[in-house]
Image (cartoon, rainbow, N blue to C red):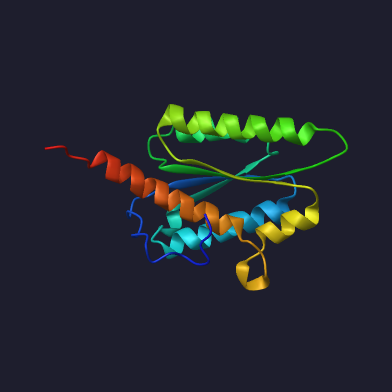
Length: 166
């Protein structure tokens, strides 16, 4: 999803929308930057200030469990997960990234809610910082992209719920 700003194509969020953001404490300078960008973008699209609830996660690997608990809450409309998995000397990053993607997808499917994967998988911290930085500062602003995907998914689910075949 490559959009440069909050899209005028997306209608505003419903007033009562509630989003839980799970933000890994590991590499918090990067993960907090993505979460803050996502929050700004969602507020621009109509999220009420009290509609954003942010919870710290110890690391990326714990995100699926925390997302499962958050998604089970009936008042939660979407869960955004922010983390960073860096390539190291071993292939641990591949295993963790696969487990995260699979786990978060299952949480979304089992709870019938958007659960978004805002977990960067990069070769080094410099790449992660570039992906987390705002577009205004030359970055890719992945937090903003996660927010747009969240809003688009919520609207698509609403459209499916309103289908009428006559």
